Image (cartoon, rainbow, N blue to C red):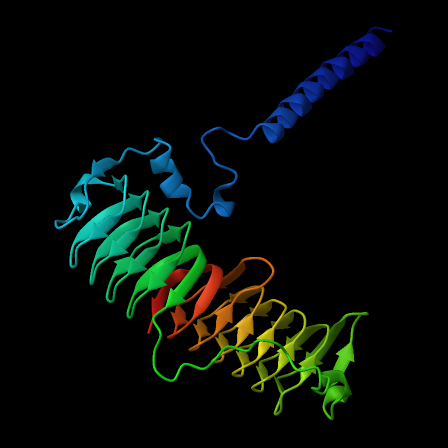
Length: 310
């Protein structure tokens, strides 16, 4: 009898501790720590917001900045701002426009409410954000850029971007190589090995390529394409779905891409390409992103290493 009472007491003691642990765990899950911003990855101008809202101290300055301010930490212009050529700064936030001069270095980040222009040879060691537009000059390097409109300097011979895909193109599944493409589900197809389209085609549905994928100029990709190798899209093509590659991605001159682009290697966006769609696009590479002349991207372009212009 005593043993039974002892066993019941132990079980009640354990149940109380388990209940207390469950309540504590639920509270931790419902209330994230205040020192961590759970929306950080969704807020490209996170650091600038910290300055604007007073959580990060910044020195108020008057434009133009003719001297380096890297030793004083972040600076803030409560108006339009100009960083004179060959100066160096820690971080810059402008409530108006921001003009970054030639060969200027910004170590952490740059942000503006108005349009931002970055002249040739400038280097930003962190994110570049604008609520209006970002104009990138030649030989510029940033880690990421996010704005309603991002452009690179126009050059000679820039190919006009594709506007719409031709409905007269032969479907990949109905072409002479269609037999090598196997249907996995109602809207998904798979190809074993490298797939090279020698002529422009209409690729309907999602496509998985266990190898590299090359699309001829003028091809229309109506849905997502995933390749375990490299992806190369010919000039004047239209990509309505996302592009994902375990290798490199090369987007040809004048090609239009409307959704996300992810490259585990490098990403090259050729002259005159346009990244715009129903929603802001996102172009990302784990290695370097190369942007040629006359490019327009509405959304974000970023890299784990650097984004550079020609």
